[in-house]
Image (cartoon, rainbow, N blue to C red):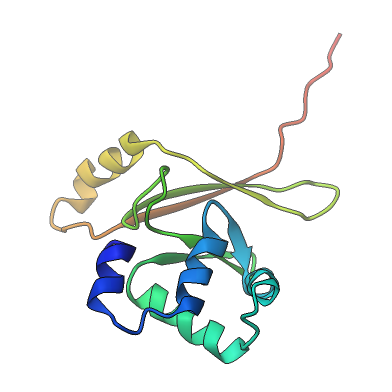
Length: 143
């Protein structure tokens, strides 16, 4: 359900929920990072943030990415790289300092290849989420 439709259908679509969607636009943030951003906008209640994150997860408006035990949140709607049901992230890890970069990859052919694979012929696929973790390739400097 698109946010506009959800706002119209849910009279309790609060300013805090709208602010949360704005903070997540084009970003992958941890709970703490979201809380820090929302605090700057005057929304400091941690319980409200937990409740709103759960509401959005339950309604497929955001996606939770678990990366080595750290949860990141991503907007699952109005995103040019994916819809909620088709999602590919590439996590690039810096080998010297663990500070991952999360990138969205739009490659629908991967989803079609998975859906058409014989192992899934007896199933209706609801969604596909792929998380690829990588480090930059080391160049081979042979002379």
